Length: 263
View 1: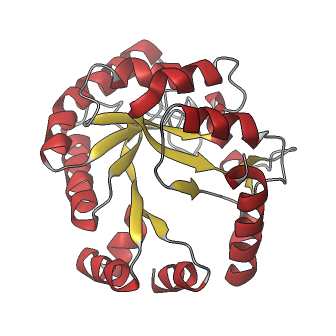
View 2: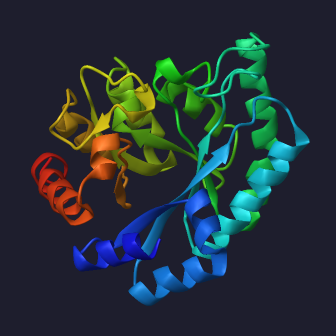
């Protein structure tokens, strides 16, 4: 965590998106101090969610995540809602509940409980639709339209959506749905969609310009919808993780300026 914060400061990055496991490893209070002392904003906390089982323990964990986001001053908690109950990412298939509609309904039921709790603490739940290839194990919300259908049941200050280029670039309705989202957009995340994808498709994200996404129309649509918040670069990629952090930050900043900021 200290290395990440220091890297942001040295490269002039003004905000940092945090992940719960890293906050836990550093300690919540120490993370708050690190970020505050560095003069950074926390753009989001990732992640809450995994709500499809209907398990009370999942609700408790999400309440803790909301409290952590509030302590960090994060405006939103990114929600990866979960896949089919019984399907575990990267593990062999066992007993599976194949009721996809039921899984989605349990997400809606959980949001009805969690949204007011988040609102009371000044945190917005940000529903993130994931590319359909993750529907079984990570997110039964696959389109921005689906995420908005759920978000619109709640006050805008309680539930919004994430527009992540990796997950939505393929959707023929994405520009229409971004316009529909308007003030519901809680976070805009960018990275590229690599081709071919690696064997572990979770790691198929690349630095902008290394894949197939046209960022200009997506970025323009998000801006036209009224979003003026932080834009996060979120890359899961083994080669990027193994590279020198300063080289990665410099390359990301250059590509961001060329392909995203100039849009």
